[in-house]
Image (cartoon, rainbow, N blue to C red; front, side, top):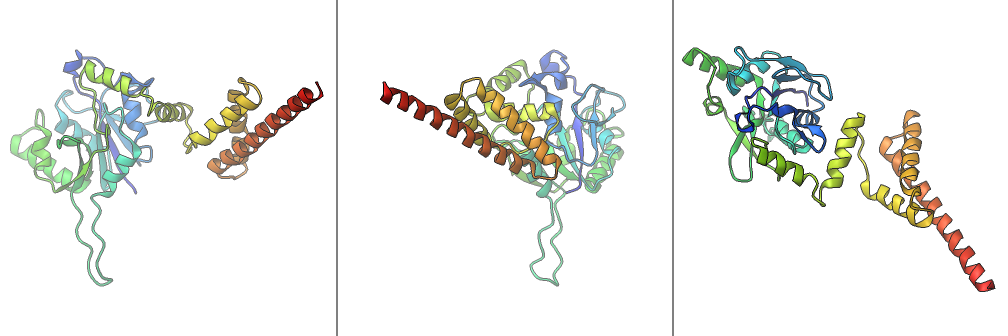
Length: 301
């Protein structure tokens, strides 16, 4: 699905004492980078805010004058896009995931035609996330560019300026589908308490491995589905059947072998699975041999 992305990162962060909110980190990664990771396949990504280092290339712009509010910032970003579908996100969503983004992008699509000769039903103007408490989140949304531009132009004509206008003045005139948020997908960091809660949540036992693997993949610039269970099973077999330090070294060698296989055209995920299988079988044979030797020595003694 072809789309452009606009990330609003120029707010004053008053509840954070004016801190550079997009640069604050959760799980060792800047909030802005975490949001950018949720939309890696955007045709063009525009960040409305002051320039800063980012994990992937983006285009930069600012509303004029800076600090003009979300509608003015959205207009500035929209002027740098050309796709018919535009994803709009705030830069403070530490748990936004690609599945939520995909759901938003697909929601405004026209309904399929009921018969070969019947026209498809017209699509909505966009789709907006609704958080678990029932609140609409206009800065976690996918909009069709044409109606968005039309309503922004009407607001500018009516008020003479976009500065200071609330987003509800814009979204109230659009036909938007509502997408119920997955847990935490709409969680934003407006206060220091929010930031502390996000940092604590990311380290919880049930999610820490998934969050860590996602962070490492982003840091290393790789996009690979990781079968965590297979790798952990391999590490366990190497640790128990050979020696504890064999666990990390073995998984490293599996990754190295899989990269070589992928370079020759193999599917990366399958290459990891096959290398893991071979290494696990070897660790089990190693353990069986050691057990047999021990039994023989005990019998002869």
